[in-house]
Length: 134
Ligand code: 9YT
Image (cartoon, rainbow, N blue to C red; front, top):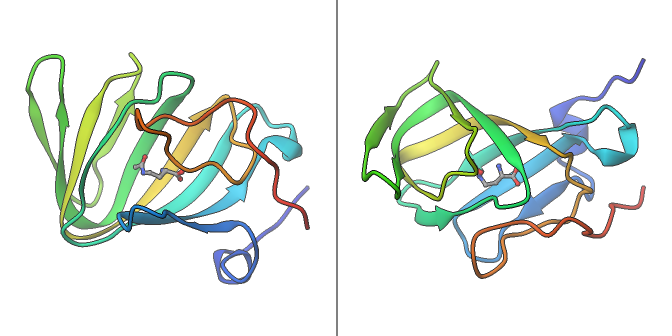
């Protein structure tokens, strides 16, 4: 069994701060753990409004705290996000995330992230990103 805490992981290279200033994410479980998925606690900063398109990954996002909305570009639908909301990007949906109040999210990625991924120009993660070294 593996046990990690957010408090300890935040002090390591598991904490990634996005250069676009929209979010930070502490990646508690990664590809190296060989679980078939990765698990992150992500903070979306208040006022963030940005587009993502995970062409290479499936992602589920559960809101623990905060308030915002997610818009799917294919149909223009907007879903409110409050604590307890889970959105599931089962179609590699191109989407916009907006945070009205800072949001804390629990995110699961399949295939798992290696550790150092930040969004490319399309708002996707590449498949062969660098691993974190601990
Ligand atoms: C909700 C979302 O996709 N935010 C971007 C960061 C991502 N969850 C990550 O890399 O942990």
